[in-house]
Length: 106
View 1 (cartoon, one colour):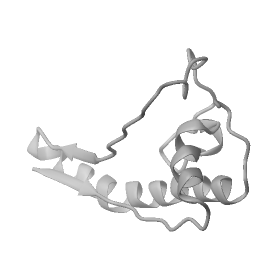
View 2 (cartoon, helix red, strand yellow):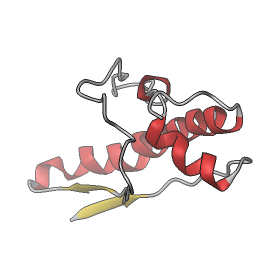
View 3 (cartoon, helix red, strand yellow):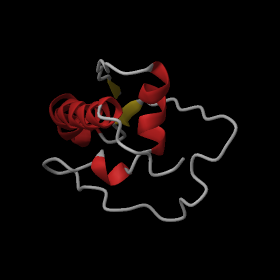
């Protein structure tokens, strides 16, 4: 059994900015934590981040339940916690993209 969670957001900025902001921003301003999920305080070994010719990101969050007794907890996490957390993350990215937040990695 697996659970797939999707979250959608609308950004009112250029297409270029909408794509670059989540990749090149200060991740500690995006993943600010929520309930059980701790915030990201910093990244290491990121000196060359964003200095590539192309970047492809496929984001899918899937929980796989291996033990039947974990199914209820994983279902609750996937259906109640994760969509709220990712909505908050996307909102943080939207604010940064629309507010012309400077990129950390350029």
